Length: 467
Image (cartoon, rainbow, N blue to C red; front, top):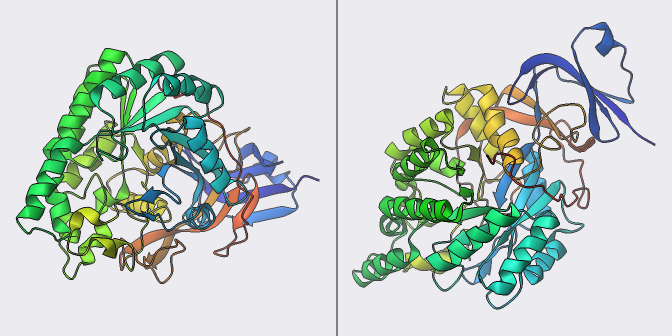
């Protein structure tokens, strides 16, 4: 038996429109929108009516860069698919795309199967997978074709982390050539890991062991160099390229230049690079370890260039790179040696609110907020218009958002399974009130009413931006 829901009186905000409209939901999908107060809207009847007067009605967030249960540095990311997707829902995100990992010497299929097993039956919201390609060989390349056919249409490679995930230029080129043929999208962690390892070794030899040196050795120029090299390799291969977690203004400049040349090159940044800086890495008493991630936080002057890139569309997506490690027992593994601090920050719950604060602060418009957090990520990774918008036929992933509510971010009140907040004490205007995933209430007026297993695996088509 289907449940009909009507959301009345809110300001519907999508990437393209803002309109005072009522929303009709049937069988888990958006059935219709009609201007509030019109005869058409008033005629709708439903078992469930949600009053959104004075609130925004927005698409559920699409976070296309998360790492639940990721093994890293001798430990695991502290959020499971159950805790991480629940926290995502609290923050107004209704779809994540996580990264399945190929281990060196194993097949892509083995890695994908392992991640399916972690996620299945445990997610509060819908999810998909990218594939981390750690071992490029003829068998792997053939498997890439099969994965694209079944809805895993993006592949991540690393120019960083030699000995772990690292691919050399030849392996990268081969994978890019394959994606040029099969329609897949290569996602690149663009940092010169070989050079960084030299600088790490030299810093430690000088006795520079504190967390702040993590930011100093992972130089912005080495992010820019790798970004440039990835762009040129993609150009040689005739393949599209998506550069993840862009943090440096010099890397933004490389992306802007490539896009000005008409190349299918795309860039993502993350809230931590927009709101945090090397000042956080330098916090005393090893507190800086909480902010160790790669690419690293940059000096504050980089933030203005990232915001500018988001406004000019040289950067298209804001994802979280959510990869949480507890301060106690996990980040502490790097006491006395910054290179042993697990790399990653918690953030899946904070993204939509932080970006709304950017609207309040005048960095971006309301529609651009929805574009970079919902619509573009859905299009980039083949989920639009099922995800990322409010339109007839779309999944009823809907957030009722109170733009006037005030909150103070804190680990005491967040829902991520981690013992600190990267934004502790930050005052924000705007807060999620109610969240529906495929028409089912997951958050109801600030109460969790969802359940593990509601979220389903979402196969994806190929990137919807390719020329």
